[in-house]
Image 1: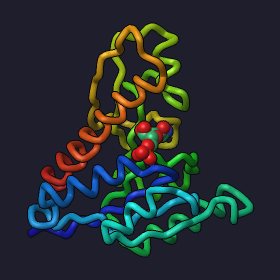
Image 2: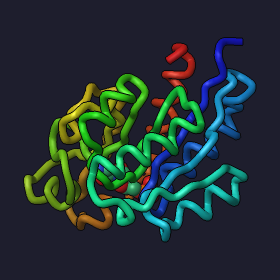
Image 3: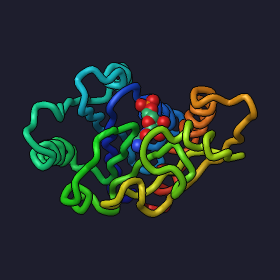
Length: 197
Ligand code: GAR
């Protein structure tokens, strides 16, 4: 078998995409097929709900609290140190809500993926569902992309499309997109694993 694939997931909150990745890894036997496993879940927020979920799955968790650092650079350096301790082949941002500096991004170039709740390049940034409704979009969706130094601007790996319904609110649209995200992120990662990254 090729080199084992060590996946580290970064979260800030609920962690439902992280859980979808953990479930897919188990259900679809990523370890047996590609030697791939999620070796750690890291959060920048001590209260992130996803930390408990990861622990319930038996995955190591760690907090690098951004509030404990005087600058973005200091936080990025501490985060990189925590990540590197796990020697990951892929780092998966899953609802990780901190902007990462150019040095951090360069360090993980080609190994750093993100999931974003819009059909990029439309609606980078926040409040994507409200903005999609405001713009009158007939479809919405989610994007898995490589992270570069821009805001949600890296090369697209995979996308999922959902309809926008006439009665949608940002909440109802967000739920539909999130359900699509839970299918999309594991599918995108699995495709990369199958391709040998
Ligand atoms: C997801 O919708 C994800 O796409 C989004 O945050 C949510 C996290 O949910 N990420 C971003 O907006 C990144 N800019 P989760 O914690 O339940 O996975």
